[in-house]
Length: 172
Image (tube, rainbow, N blue to C red; front, side, top):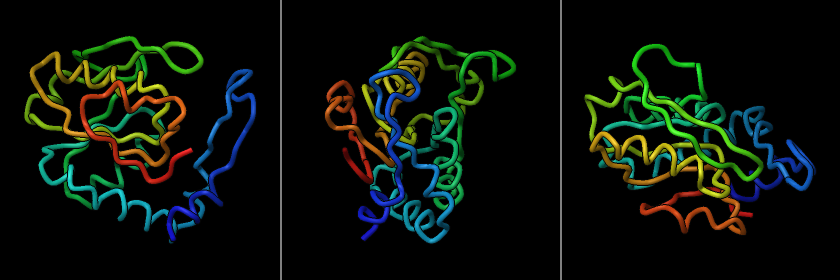
């Protein structure tokens, strides 16, 4: 079963990146092509992607899964990047993390051709990152249909802050 294989591969790192955080590292999944392929197929099967015009992947680990999903689903991919990483006219917003704050930017013209999106990221914790992307997209009259993540940290209850469905492969 995929969930069991993912739990075996995902590594835990205490006090990373700061004291008191238990970091769930899913990079070992990428070292197992059969599991990674099954993971992408499972994520791609979420019905929310059928109605989406495009995928928005969040910097940086979201790119690993969003780009694979974009290829499999034959959907365009837009990126939400950390400050100073995108050229041109960008829409930016700050957000809080479980252990600090940051901001994300999306190129304004990348949103022009599409109306409905699914956000893809590696992990849902407090929901701040996803809310940030949703706020940027909503600010130009576009819609987020859902979120697809590999890991959901259920105890942090980030899902409760979102007004769209969350599709996660494993929960802690």
